[in-house]
Image 1 (spheres, chains in turn green, cyan):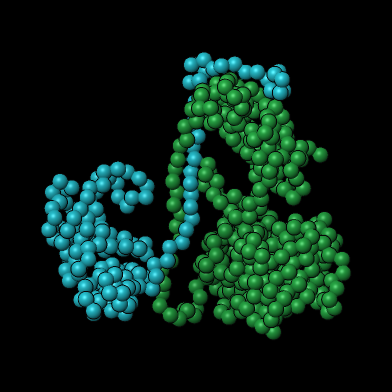
Image 2 (spheres, each protein chain N blue to C red):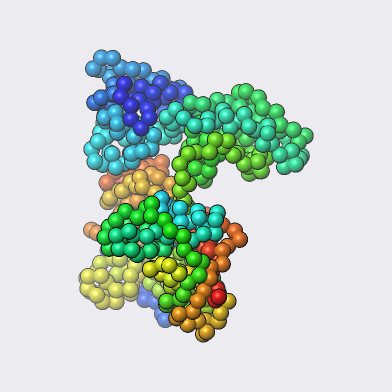
Length: 386
Length: 164
């Protein structure tokens, strides 16, 4: 079978059920049909139901009933699976075709841990084996904890590190009463230990999941000396620096935008009106953008409205107010609030749970933040009126 | 309520206008990854591990580039294996005094940022000059590299230059 990026299509589906994360599949009932074309391709059907996943090879030409069908060539499929090809770009360029329910496609990365091609270097198992020699009893004083390592995929497995009275005992399998449980793909775990994958990035991307007592989870890195790979990779050292440019900014609102923000504090949405053409501007601006005359009069609009346009963002971009990268997918929309006409729309977020249900014309209402400070985030998002 | 359902507001007085002015704090954080390249990596590693400043010489036109680059800007020759070692001393060919403070800057102002041509090099490199008051810096001044105690894997493995 043709190999791309160090894996075959068969490899990916063989490990599919082992990579399933039942805890994220509650209430999911779906059949995903995969039509992988070209050299090294084939047909598979993945059924997720009752918190179980079943992957089967389809021999005939008929997939039977499916919720979603994904059609792509073998190289693209493996590239997207291992993260070498951008999935969104492959979809927009037409190399990946999706029929049926799109919602399931967005869910897939949460339902299955990422596939990692067979590791050629150190394995997660090798690293786990170094725990006893790297253990620092002085850092474990007073700690009584069972720490689970659930490392799926090639070279992985399940282990529990039992720490008590400054001593460490490693056990195969996950103990019943874990203090902390860590679920991560075996290859990702190796990358985390080698410093090639940033833990915060891994958590953000849903590739590393830590549950249980977070206070204990925080001290975990101190319990062990840093893992040093025994075999140094060949070839000259290359320098890569990971940096963050961080620029502080201050926006001055002026009196008009300021009045709008002040209104949000009191759960009121204000537009201002052009005295010449009667347009409403939302958010209000000092001057009518069409007539170029001062627009002073404020009127309250909304708070409910109708969706005019919805945009779902799959590319994370930093929020200019916080510098944090937003979790994807997120939805933004233009909303025609009650009392506004034509193009006098208001822009805001759509509630994540409503993202795939809203349509043009859906009626929505704002969900206000508990504590409001006179900021655009005083509205958390708009939700569907059901 | 007006005809379209909005509630009529009032014109703001000057005091009300003033009270409404706000300042919103924002922050733009852009994570990125910088790759020094094969040639750049060797340059930094020799600063870091050997306290040696390397450049490259173009055989075709004879010019010595510091910091090194992979390709000669004039004749496009491949310079990636044409290493030469430079002296740690050189002369200031131009300079400026940085007088504003920002956190991306390597020093508190005022400090001197100079173009320094090392002995044996044809191109100058930018670096910090310390050990001389900004008003006393002159073009043509001889300076020597002072290496950093702690590595940052970048050009600041030379901490600064100081007058000889």
